[in-house]
Length: 391
Figure: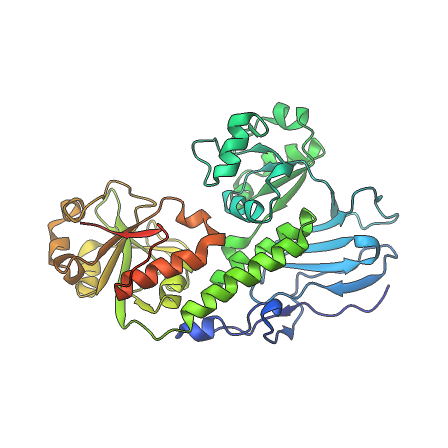
């Protein structure tokens, strides 16, 4: 087997500036990437396929792809999973290591991870989805909704209660799950017992917002649409870079919702929503609590309203998280959550915004989301419909 080169990736970003967050962008943009192989990358196939190259990544840190002769691709995931993507008509190499699962192209897919829907839509790979974990009503993609309504795609249940009989009957050979499947190992095992290869995507663990988007390159590899994936990533990343290169807006932003206990739930400073606000030129007001605060997690922080009020009342802009709490459709609705909110500077000046319910699943629209955030900060015209002002 030929010697293997490391997978390129960007330097760790300085979270203090939007420009540094984008340092070391995609190979397709011409920026330099450095070779630093992650510890989970294991290129020992156990067979004699000749290595021909490595997919260079600018942001994603939770997967690698190595290229081999005759179109074979080895995928390594940060959770220790390895997959060999086998081109249509090719066979499984003799002597392949036992821990490597196979993904045969074309892959009839049970698509569970909602975060991957927009990526498959962008590279025109939804035609390989046979079973979905979302209904036509809940799908964030109009094309997937139409396919479900037309009967081309069947609803097969959530990750915790899939319709195993349907999955078997439709001939699914691949399930794309998110990390929730880790809480249901028996479900994963039963899928594997049915002959379904289970790939657990880790995009939510990416430390940089464009790292989440770069999973489109992995989907391109899995579904044989690498050129489409590389083009889409380069195009969207360039638009994000263009917005991030503008002068800071000089505005502080509070992004939150009020939970049933009356506490403010915001995002951690390292979360991708806070990163998008910074890339838009805003200054995100972060509240990073200790990990043992009830309701807090690696991405969100739960803060009692008095504490939140003391630090956020002078925020220039409020973006209320209506992806979680859709009950707020006006400033009066917001004040109805707690009278203290009426004293917020942004509330008094009318700089209160809401966001689209599918924003979290719209990775391929992050350039438009960041653009909408920029417009909210600067008062500029133009809006893609992801962030809008409340009256």
